[in-house]
Length: 394
Image (tube, rainbow, N blue to C red; front, side):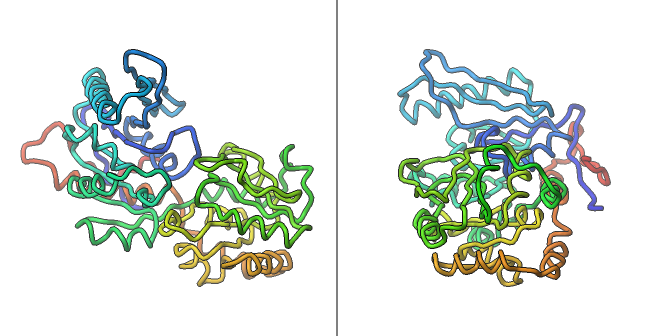
């Protein structure tokens, strides 16, 4: 059991999270971590604004079943960026005053949020750097400068992958590697016979599947060529389409786009695949990614074929847990090798490797580090905030 240092006060502590990802989009790192954080704190998840036909800015506040609040600014259409930031700052200040939030942790996923939150005085500033956002399509040109500002303000920086850690550890004094983890029991259900979802049941086997956002990171040419060269293999892609033209995605009788599914539904889909794939392009947007779905696929008991993404090659490829292929021919050969595999030792090695991985453990270790920052930042005579040791959030 990892000892947890818990930041507490007379009231429950608050965590104010600023995210470029929407809470109800794809369930990934922020949702895994902050849903656990909500068990011990009041989490306020501040999303990017929605622009609507209205005159007065307002906040949409939705409280989910756990008590976590999703806060979405609603701003007038066609406002300039500088004006939008000013409006968000005013909404944020009013929200904190109305909710009487005075002691809190600021948790950033996007440096751009500093444009409207730099006036705040949190007890600890956390930057959970899960991607190199400046490399993504449509990234604002000022993002790199804003990240430098966030590094200057942050008490602690977490990175979601080893390659990103190598890049960021020279930019801050207190950087910690916390790779994305897994809910093993959730995905291990895919190893049992599960009913095939209706929209997938008519697709012939063998099936090679992928779930995740379909965006500029997807190697569309690779998919097209693999489908062309393997007419008997069906490629199944589960997930929403973002930032790319859906009409330009490769089309073929053996390529199937099933759209977005909930996190709860994923084991049913994966469980009825024969092989899982990571068909990522080799470009700036994938240079530092560390796909959460890698250990999830493995927890589901599926052999995996991936393009040579650094954080997949090391350690998964080097340990022989994932097949690595750099072009369509090699990808096709790796798929067929996985389909022919009869290797119980492979599954044993997979289970041994992922056996210690869990989002619970990852969050506890991260919270320990935040607690140390809180302790370091506490001033003599502080009576409203204390640290308690030896308590678990579960």
